[in-house]
Length: 220
Length: 220
Image (tube, rainbow over all chains, first blue to last red; front, side, top):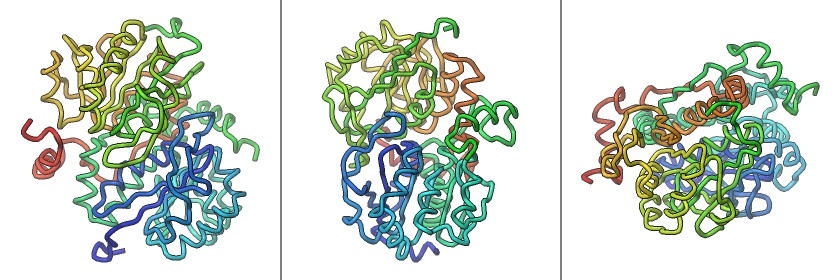
């Protein structure tokens, strides 16, 4: 996608569902909403408040899926609720249709598995939350251990917080690096985690084992 | 605060208001909700959906302020709506009262200015979004250019995304570093921003000028 081809307005649809992970949606939202011409919608199969996983924060889906028929950018978050969402045939059909005309189809965390359930990962390189990487081949995808993966117009991100990094990279593809950098400065994204424990590759092995064992993919 | 003094349940109240910045609340939420015994509430002067700044995402405030009278942790996000929120006397009175008994009173981004309006920054070291640093002395605070500042039980964070770093540091103070690291691994917080533009100290000076000029604090 060249910058010159950027649609204006740029219609960005965030797909919400019960049991989503709020950060998966809000991280990219906080970046992409600043793009020139951005028109952001929060859509769901059934509009209304969508409760986050484990009885968490509700994000409001203001629009039915059909109200945003041909978004330029589709963003699909993850969270434990994505498993049930895979069985929502209206949502799955919408994802397939939206992907046909989107400029970018994007997932964060286990949102990749929802794209997989819609058949959109077949033959693609993709990533997801580190505990869920073994799920990707079940959808015909080649797992890539990376912060985010661009493969054609399909963009997948690692777990939760990776959506911020991915969205900045996507912002640069859509509107150029200067705008992406202005957004990064606006959200003061100068990360300084107090620990270096965010990757299973570098944290103590027993910590990775413990977190994996507590995940819904343990023994899957 | 020693770990042994950690209350259980640990009542964490997120203060929502019209025009908040969603990431300011969701970043710390995504970390603190995993703390042992965490009971998270989203509270507002008037419960209901609270629309994010610039007509953005609505987060649902399910409880009236009075429903959570003595939270252990109070989290105050920022966003352009904080200016109007400073005039909400019910909210200001609640913040003052909550701070009297809280274990931690926390802000993200320009949420610090709301704490300031409640008189809670007087004589404190504090930080906020980089464009708003000059506001802090107006509330009797000493501005500190840092990702986050712990001063007694008052914790303030830099702009938007800094709330994630602050919350991990706070999680370590509340529950110990092992739990904080497990949370960090769970949210796969291994940041890899595609640009090094998140701090006004290191980005191109013209970029910082442009972003500052577009902020609501320009010329204030």
